[in-house]
Amino acid sequence: MKKILPSLILILALLLTLLTPLASAEKAAAAAAPAPTATPAPAETNGDGLTVPTITAKDVVLVDLDTGKMIYERNKDAKAYPASLTKMMTVLLAVQAVEAGSVKLTDKVAAYDDCRQGLTDDSSTADIVPGEVLTLEQLLYCALIASANEACNIIAEYVGGSISAFVDQMNAEAKKLGCTGTHFANPDGMPDDDHYTTAYDLYLIAREAMTHDLFATICNTQSYTVPGTNYSDARTLYNSNALISGKGTYGSGYIYDYAEGVKTGYTSAAGYCLVSTAEKNGIRLMCVVLGCPSQTRNDGSTRFCDFTDSISLYDWVFTNYKYYTVYSTDDLVTEVKVQYAPADNDTVNLRPAADVSVLVPSTVTKDAFGKTVTLYGDPVAPIDAGTALGEMTVTVNGQAAGTVKLLAAASVDLSEGQYMKEQLHGTFSRLWVKIVFWLLIFVILLYVSLVARYRMLRQKHLRDRRRAQAERAKAREREATERIFRRSPPPKMEYFTEDDMKKPAGPRLVPPGGVDKSQKDYFDEFFRKEEEGRKKKK
Image (cartoon, rainbow, N blue to C red):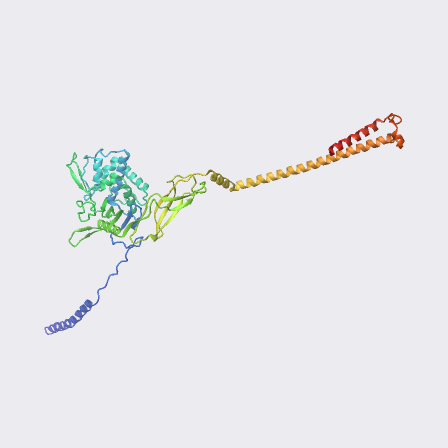
């Protein structure tokens, strides 16, 4: 056995000697082989075709405040937890109440007993204790600058009457602003499954809030000192937004000279969140980033990505975009015809109500712009200069980029002649008018034809009557003549000699038996008619 053991050891040593060159060869081969390269993720582009910088945020909205253009978005309608971004709505409602006169900034408000209920040990706070009295204005600064949760509860109780009633107001205001994916369960943003929103809805809330001077003033304040109270000495608050203040929670490494407001937020469920604005070279932006992580640097310090993501996006826009003035108020966009205007002045030029400036990539040229004109109906005289007659939508590469009203560049008077002409034309172009008109024409023609026929028949009747009367008269004459000649034959004519004619006239001869009266009447009537006939001929 003792002889076998050394032999086994010798054999193992020989095997190790043989395997060592093989291992060295594998290492050499591995060292000589090229290292595998990671396939880079495809570059992300926005709607304008520009490459977006790499950012960590889960949900993003980046908007041009002047035109409303969505420059970039990522999951803008995805459900997200807002954390302390909730406080924007809380302070907005309080500011609206101040503007409405229902409360005053100088109102003294005492912290109610359970104002800190539901707050965790790591909750952001201004160290307000139950029974402490502050003004409403001081509470607003505590809520927005120091992100104090207990301040939000006190504000909600005071302005809304109760926290539940105030939360109802928050949800009503969100709906009014057009938020479709938001529901609030509390005024401070503490975690709750029924407390959620979206990046786009937070943009809508922040955009409205920043139109109120008091809100904008508070959120842009770097530090604020709360005077001493009945429970505390004076305390100085520093804005938690590291873009505008280096003395807050997140340090001084994120100061951005072009930034203003608005609010930070963080919970483990929501991640690091930030709503901010920035302005440079006339470009005003609002950025919402949600669900950002924190990263540990090589030196052991923490990098908060909500600030770095926002700065990267701002720098990207300011470097790659510009405003292009497509139309000015002096430009004549189009000419339209005006009804009832004089024939020599029946058109009017339209101009933009304001300059049309569009935020576009710096590489865009004039050829990329187009327009669509929509009239509010056919223009009708009289028209005053400056009257809105339509609107124009400006497009960039076929995509709508902005809309502006179109105004009449000059006045147009009413022409009464043209008005009457148009009215008559319009009236007679209607179907029922045409039917009535032609029916009236038919009735008139029918009446004329009936009158003409009546006159023809009447004249024929009169001619027949006169003819009948003449025939009756002739019949009476014949009858009278026959009666005369039946009673007494005509006198016998005697011939006279020339000597007889020379004899002086003697007494008038009277037929034997005297003059017959009917015969006399016949001849008197006969000679009378003959005399009348001669007079008519003359």
